[in-house]
Structures are given as C-alpha cells and as structure tokens.
Image (cartoon, rainbow over all chains, first blue to last red; front, side, top):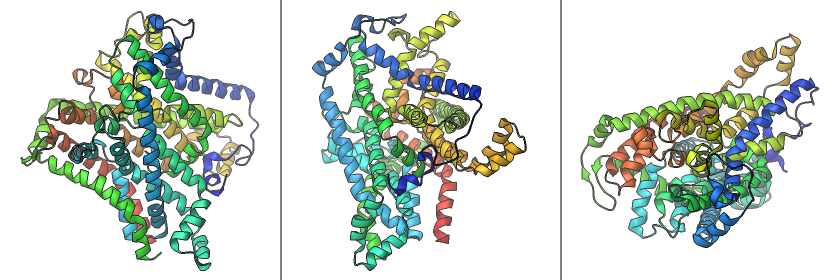
Length: 294
Length: 289
C-alpha cells in the first residue's frame, strides 16, 4: 500500500503504532467477551434473515420461530423465476458503475485544482459543496423528478445515475481534495520543471501517486449508489427500478413474496459484507479523510 | 496554479452541480412560495405554505419525533461509539476482523437493514427477538402498532447503522492521543476511568464534536429506515420531517408540493446554521493561506 493510506492513523498494522502492551489476562478475556457479544448483536439481523430465507416456506415465518429445519434454497429459486430481480440487479449495477466513473472523471480535476489553489474561489466552492452535502435529498430530488418527466428521461437508469453523480459530487470533491492535499506541492513543481503541463502532471504523476485515494473515493461512490433508496424510488417506476426499491415495495406483501424479498436482501447484502472485509482499509481511510461523511 | 488552469479543471464539476443541485434547489425555493403541481405553472401565494406547515399539528409532531430521535440517537452514538472504540483500540491481531464485522451494518442499504431489523421484531413473521422478549415479560409488545415501542425500535436501528461511523472516527482520534501523556497519568497512579475522563476525553473533544454534528445532520434527515420499520408512521405520530415531506409532496400525486418545498427550505435553514462552525473554519483557512 502506498503512502496515502499509511498516513491515515487507523490502518496502522499492529506493531507499527504503539508498542505491544502486556495486559492482565482476565481483562483481555473481559474485553474479548464484550466484543464477541457486540459483534453478534450487530450481525443478528443479517443472521436471522439468512435463517428465515433458507427455511422451507411453510415454517419460515411461524411464531414461535423454528430453530431447526431442513435448509432450502427454494426462496432464491422462486425469486429468480417469478420476479424481475435479475433486471433490478442489472439496473443497480449499471447505475453504480456509471455514476462512479463519471463522478471520478469530473471530480478528480476539480478536487486537484481546489487542493492546489488556495484563496477565496476555492473557499466558496468548498463551502458550497459542504452545504450541498448536508442538504435534505428531497430539496433536489423532487425538482429532478419534475425535470426528468419534462425531459422524458423519467424511469431510466440514465436519470438515476445523473442524479447520483450530482448528489455525490460534493462528497467526492471533499474526499479527493483531502487526499490531494497530502501530496507535497514540490512534486508538481518538479514534474512541471521537467516539462509536464498541469494536465499531464495530474494524470501521469499525481493520480498514480494517490492510487489508493482514488480507489477509496471510487469505492464510496459505488457504495452510495448501490445503497441509494430515496433517489431511485422517486426517479424510477418499473423499468429502471433498483434492488433496494424492489425490496421496499415487497415489504407489505404476504408470505411467499416476503420470503423472496428476504432472499433478495441476502443476495444484496452478502457481496457488501464480503466487501466490508476485503476493502476495509479503504472504508476506514475514507471515513476518516472524508471530513464530510455521506 | 494559474487562474485559467483552475477554471478549466473545476468547470465540468461545477457545471454538473450547478445544473443538478443549484437549479433544483432554486426550484424548491420558488415552489415553496407557490400553490403548484408537477408539470404545471404554479400560482404565487407568498408565505402561505410556511404558515400552513407551522400551523399543521402533524408537522409539529414530525418535528417533535425527529428531534427526540436525534437527541437520543446522538447521545447514544457518542457514548457507545466511544466505549466501542476504546475496546477495539486495545485489540491486537484480531482488529481487522472485528472492524470488518462492525462495518457490515454501515454498508448494508438502510432500507434493507431496516427490513431485516423489522423481521427480528415482527410477531407475524416469527421474529426471534420479539419471541424472546414476550417470553420473558409474559406479554406481547406491539412493536409496529404502538407508538413508543416503535420509536425504540427505530432508534435502535438508527444506532445500529450509524455506530460504525462514530466508532471509526473516534478510534482515529484515540490513536492520535500521545502515548507519553497516558504513560504519565498511569505512572501517577490514576485509575482507568480517571485517565479516560481527565486525559483522553478532553484530548479527543474535537473529534467527539465532529461526530455529534455530522450525526445530528444525518438523523435530522431520517427517511429510509422508517419506510421499512414504521408502515403506520402517520397514525402513530412517528413521521420524520423527511417522511412528512414525502407524504405531502409525492405520495398521493403530490397535491401539496408547495408545502413540502416550504418544509425542505426550513430544514435547509436549520442545517445551514449547524454547519456554521465548519464554514467558519474553511473561511479562516482560506484567509490564512
């Protein structure tokens, strides 16, 4: 891992930060015991959902609940065969990929410029970005709904992706600007003395240097788009519906459909859970460097 | 960096934000002064929408509910976030694994997390937690049909998905407390709780304040989880301000778009006031640069 992430404090590996402490063992057992309980409590909604959706449908939602059962994946099969889940999943991924790529392409140069040019224009732009980051979504999404109907792009993945690029742009600018600010200006000057233009300096020297920072920002953009419910709910109807919206519409349904919604929730959750482990250092770095959280 | 280069670099991003954030926001402000429907020209009514909102008991209840939720959740976030950060900070090799588990609730979409939470509590769907609690108490708690149990459940869910953020930021703060000060306090024989109260907490005060402000702004905008956890929010008085906006300005064809927009503007004003310390910090930095 390169310099950018090593400078953020939480990601220090054991041994590099403070010296290992010799602890009273009873205390360590106590701490361990509490943390095991906390982890278990934090995971319990997901564990219980995983159990509910692998039960045979007739006992899935019995009260009192059944704890021992023959596991079955029927709910997943039904979800795949009787609903448009596949389509919703594709929509979600298309929206997430497009909005991430566009957000980075327009956000990287802007953040770089803001990090390198102090002064009142930058301050005004950064303050505006901060205010827009904290805006209640409906203040921009309801007018977007009106606009998307007028332009005929209502219920398209394009409209959702465009909305998310704009909504997440303030966060990505802040995050990237903080990563750029960690790279010394002398590197830019050296590159330009060697004959690079500003643009070449950014693309060939600075962005490769902050690779993990770019990845962190990309991960957050993808995650925000993947999680988004409110915007997708307002801007889509049937054809561009995303998975979180689909799950929310199924909640009022009865048993077989509800169990399928649970299966959909598990299919959406498992990749992001794996992701929380694999991309952990980027999530931690982003949450700390972001200053303005999403 | 020359001004021309600067403008070239920021223009695409600024154009997108101007077109898709500033213009819509302007539209919201205009709507808030009109009686209007989607796709139609509005009729100017002055501040009538604001007057309607402030006189509507349902809006009053939404504000009360949102503020209650915010106070309870933010206090709990600071306390439990701090305790959890202290515990995680003392871990060695198992830290990445524990952090991974604790991050799970942060990455799950809120509406999906809310749905999963509701299945733990719903007796119609064999919720295990509801079953355990009613076995112990001997009576059934109506988590979805009674106002207060529903509020408790919503608060727990909000805490569940926000605590990873609080914990991680406080953890970073804890790691920047100089080891020498802690060493000195321990050599002086201070018991653990006094080290925390008199040494560590004062030195991470800034971080705690940051977590508090960001969390307050987030909980004030509560929406997603209520869709899953409180289907009867209106009847129970458990509408958040954002859910109120959604219900009056979108749900039934948006009969009261002007009213919803007025509430949006009021919420923006409150959030802008809360952002003031950050704004002052940025402005000061710009002046000294």
